[in-house]
Image (cartoon, rainbow, N blue to C red):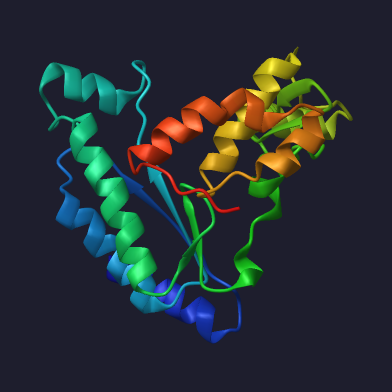
Length: 219
């Protein structure tokens, strides 16, 4: 809306860095609708753009409206996949660099250390409501209820209601998947982290995908 645009321009004029979160797979939304949102954000010159797919748990009011027919349905998987890819393409055509499957920045300054910490064996202590992190093989998240999160902090409590131990195989697969989201995996570095020969693990699959033209091998 014009109010959002005016606010972004005002904030930029005061010298602050700006970041916007855009959502696709909204009920009734089309690919062109989402591309237009990305275009506007890019032409406003915001420093960082994040693109997220709307996910609706069954208990939220909007999902109930969709199920009852009182709201248009969400785009199907093929449609929201087209939205995601079109959004990537639009941002990159406007000179933004894609850091992962969601985040785009104009410069290296927009490299998100929190997001990238999840792609490597880096201990992360989440500090915001609903944020996630891990220390070693202990994976945990902070309290999602903002009121309870705030109250826990005021009471001197650690706002981490749950956690789980993940085994090395699951951690390996998780790191591997997240590295793929960055457009590439350095098998040598990954092998050093986990003390395994990654090439011997994946060589058959890599060769097969390479022959099909689905991946590129550098080095």
